[in-house]
Amino acid sequence: MAVPNLRSPVFVVGSPRSGTTFLGSCIGKLPEISYHFEPVATKAAARYVYNQEWDFSKAKGVYQRVYAWLMRLYADGDLRFADKTPRNCFVIDFLHQAFPDAQFIHIIRDGRDAALSHSKKPWMQAAQAKSAKHEPGGYRYGPYARFWVEADRVAQFESTSDIHRCIWAWRRHTESALQAASQLSKQQYHELRYEHLVTDPNAEAERLLNFLGITAQTSRQRFYQAMSQARPDSVGMWKKELSTEQLRQIEQEAGPLLQTLNYASYV
Image 1: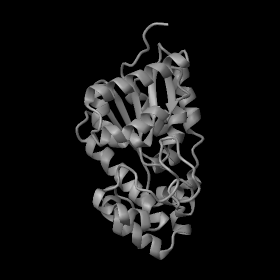
Image 2 (image 1 turned 135 degrees about the vertical axis):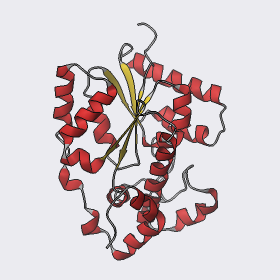
Image 3 (image 1 turned 180 degrees about the horizontal axis):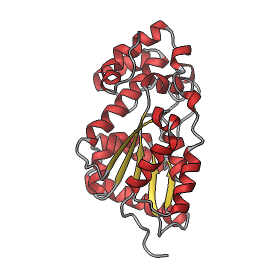
Image 4 (image 1 turned 90 degrees about the vertical axis):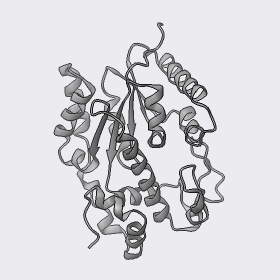
């Protein structure tokens, strides 16, 4: 096999439980794409890049080798590499520098729904503190601070409620991606809302296909079909399930960002 193609890689980013997995799986249906779900090695490496524990040359080498190995493993060397990892929200600047022709797709979901969905997973639940389980990126299940938690708020993060930790995660992932996106051109950054994806999947599919430069009609039709499987009943669940106290915590932690993104008020 020739040297794997790492030109114009695609990075799907967004906070956990914002639709990144669904969107990534749809992109994975495109025959032009070699799609990879949260590669363990680079997912774990993100903290070292973010904390500047590795210099740029070392970090770039790690990512290139991991991606090239994955392309060889799946015999996809001539396709276009795509990586879906929420943690990449924090290293977009690095990824852009390491892969100058990369394209970034950022999916944003109402933080209330994202936090509610996230809180139902074991990853940051207080009840998992003694489980001894680890997620693939290396962190223990439970209320333990991740690398993206502000240094002066670690104790608060580890002692607060599950829903607070989860809206915290949404805010940090989303604001980090948006900040980095401000330095990218419209040819390199594409933003979509989860709510629009599930209510008008064909329109969002067309926009995304055009952004990626996918012109083959068979590929486009395959993508339309995949996107049509989105579930509109997943929108607005927070209205039924979140308590007044939980909404207060969400507003205190992420109210300004929710307002900036034009999500509905809490009234």
